[in-house]
Length: 419
Ligand code: NIG
Ligand code: FE
Image 1 (tube, rainbow, N blue to C red):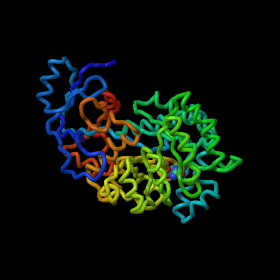
Image 2 (cartoon, rainbow, N blue to C red):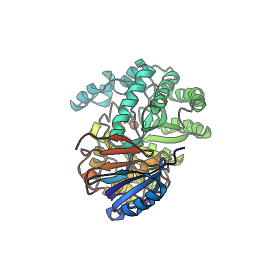
Image 3 (cartoon, rainbow, N blue to C red):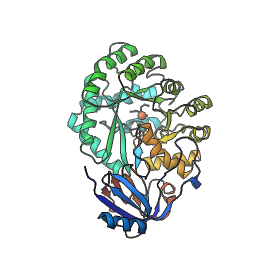
Image 4 (cartoon, helix red, strand yellow):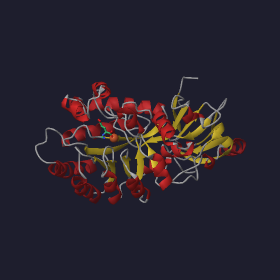
C-alpha cells in the first residue's frame, strides 16, 4: 500500500464541504472556503487540510513530495455521477428529430426508436466494442471532473445480453482511472422477444441472472423502471424483495412520467429514487421523511423537454437531493453533469452549496459510498482544481469551465491543456 505523503497547494480557495448536512436545504453561507490552503495526502487518502505554510512545515518533517501550484486555483471534491447508462451501442439521433417534430413516445417506438432500438444495437455489439465505448465515455466524464460513475446495464434484456453488458462494465472499470459502480437494470422494459408476462420475465431474471451477478462479482445493485408501459409497483415489489434477500441494494427509476415508483422505493428502503419529474407534494413528503435519496436527472428533462424534478420542494421538505446526468443515448445524450446541475439550479433556485452537495457527497451516498465527496481526513483524495479565484464561478459558468486538473486516489489523472 502506498503511504507516501504528498503536499499540494497553495489554493486560492479550498472548498472541503466538511460539516454540510446530508439532508435538506443548505445556504451558501454554510460553505467556508479556506484561503491560501493546501492538502496533505497520505497515499490515496486525505491526511490533512489547512493553511499552506503550516502544512509545508509538516510536509518537510514527513519528507513529503510537494506539488507546488503557480497562479490561482480553487479546489473542490471530485464529482460522483450516480446514475448513467454509458454502456450502449448505436445512436438515437432519429428519436431527437421525431420528438422535435411532435411525435409521441409511442409513435417513435413504433417507428423503430426508443429503448428497443438501443437494445438491438447493444446486442449486436461485441463485449470488446462495449468495453471500449464505455471506457471512452468514462474518460470523457473523468476529464470533466467525474471520478466515480455509476453505470447501468439494461440494454441487453436477456440473461446472456445483460451479462455481456455487466462484464463489459467490469472490464472497462479496470481500464479507466474513474471508478465505475455497476447496476443491473434488466428490469428496464419487457423485451419484445420475451414470450411471457412481466412477472415471468422478472422471475426468470431473478432466478437465472442474480446468482451469476454474485458469483462473478458483477454488481451488488438492482434497478428497475417503474412506469406505465414498463413495470408496475405490483410486478416489481416481489422482484425487489428477492433481490434484497440475496443481498443486493436497490435503486429505482421512479415517477418519471407518472407516480408510483417513489412509494415503492420508500417502502423497500431503496438507496435512491431517481427521476421524480412527475412527483407531487405527496411524493415529496414521502421521500423527505425517508432515508431514500431523491435523485434529480436534469439531463432527461433537457433531453425530453419535460418538467424538472421538484428539487427546491424536496430540499425544503428535508430530503437528501442528489443530481446525476442519466447519460444515455435516448433521453439524455449530453452527459455533461456540471452543465446539467447548473441548469437545474437556475430553474429550481438552488444554492451553489446544494448543487455541489448533490454532485459530490450526497451523490456518493446514493451509491452507499461514505469515503468520498468531501475533502477531509481519511476520505479518498479525489478532488478537482479549477483556474479561478472564487468557487462560485464553477456553476455560474454552466459547465463551460472545465477542471484544470482531476485527482483520483491521490494521483493527478487528468490535466487540461486549455488555459
Ligand atoms: O433513465 N427512463 C428510463 N430509462 C432511461 C432512458 C433510456 C433510454 O431511453 O434509452 C432514463 O431516462
Ligand atoms: Fe436512467
